[in-house]
Image 1 (cartoon, rainbow, N blue to C red):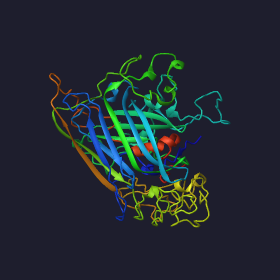
Image 2: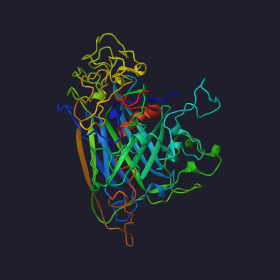
Image 3: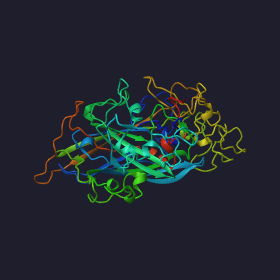
Image 4: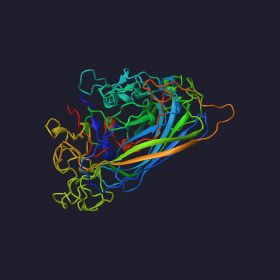
Length: 510
């Protein structure tokens, strides 16, 4: 059975890992705005404290959405390596409100989403596949009594330990998605993962932290002085072998509001209680953790009480985040992933139903062959207009093997030969080899001041990372995230859907 991935919608074209980002640019024409805001606040800004951190990252209405985001955590922070934290311990919580377009409609639906983040395995050799690979009805080995059928492998709990397999195993696609200069898989020093079910879809969100100085991409600075690079992965976006398929979310737009709290001390996970599986909270089968994080302790085993992060000595430290805004090929203010007419300025506002779209089929009048004839899938390729990266030229699953067309194929590269997908499918891209439109860039920084500690309280010394970085062998599991994607994932998506409307394809299609 060939694994599939449903298209995640707009920003997913984010086509990325939150940090592998194509900082390269081509065209200089753009009219979109990109004005993200960032705030970072420790709950206890005292030296030596094991403090929670809350990060708020927002985009105002009307801005283009993310193309990617890289967060650097100051190297002076004392952070416990993932191997020293119990697998399944609750290490953080993230909430976001994203604005989505559903089923080819305007992008005006606000969706709240929440993830409880757990410490997850960093053993890159003990892996689990992302997609559902169990035999289907009619295939050899199919078992009609197997409840794992039709469930993605990452979301199953084959060991019966109360943790889904993406928590206690390492999703194998990461080894393809995050590689060094020699295309060898990167080794994180910490990983946290959360799974939520939205509209019947299992959604996987992960934060991976690497040692200071780790090479992520030739376009991303890898100066050890910046601290720990933190990557965000939503579903299996960034996997070069991803195979798109249609989904419910057809657009992802702004405004975007996100808040992420990384705990300073771990909390117990009741889903790992040593009782018969049928006595565990039913939520354990779908999220591997309680929906609401409660106090520490209370179950056996008890993962609570482990110091996850230790504030550095008294002083002022700078958190740096590099955020990239999506490309706008025609300069009309709508990013390519959101613009059904990427080379022609739109007549209307795609946030408003029917604006510039008299037949309300999702195609703006600027490029609709007949704006009085409703056809929600103009090219009949299985992708609705607002989710199709070539709405008027068939490039769906039936075209997967056609050269330069493929299944939502988008293979632009930058001047360094790096992936630089512009969310315009090769089948209709006037410049299919290099990206159309410029990536807007915002470099955000915030100084966080740490004051004197309590008497007798001093920062915990940490081992020097093997990569020659500044301080410890671990990293914060979430300082900032691309919540953008989260929204999409939350509603639809399936095992590997791009939350984006026009992004996916690329890579292998067979």
